[in-house]
Length: 146
Image 1 (cartoon, rainbow, N blue to C red):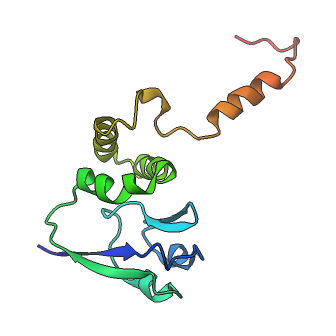
Image 2: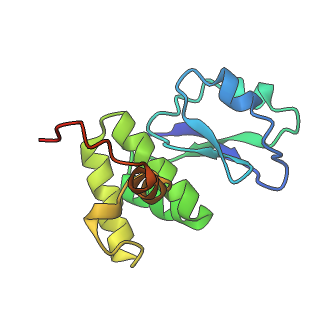
């Protein structure tokens, strides 16, 4: 069984965002100034994005995939693009309630030595700054904190 998916040529992409605005599945995001596919599972390949891209950076790829393989996708398409893409992919899976695929992604990242603890997964990169900011606010002694 064949499945059409999109492929993004990073050298041609300059992150104009036109592909994102037309994608009905919201399967594309701009990360580190490049368009990235967050999940082949959600890319239904309507080919609208290929027509919207002014640089022709998006092409259709015909893959021999009978079933979506999160393990293969994260190894081939997510990990090579670095930390921000990994974080965005994990958030994408969580926001789409894909708990099984999220667990697979976490397992693959651990196998590749990219995660050390479950606590830090999918957190906002500014989370520690939020904690720090909360500590700097003066405490109101008149408020009962239970």
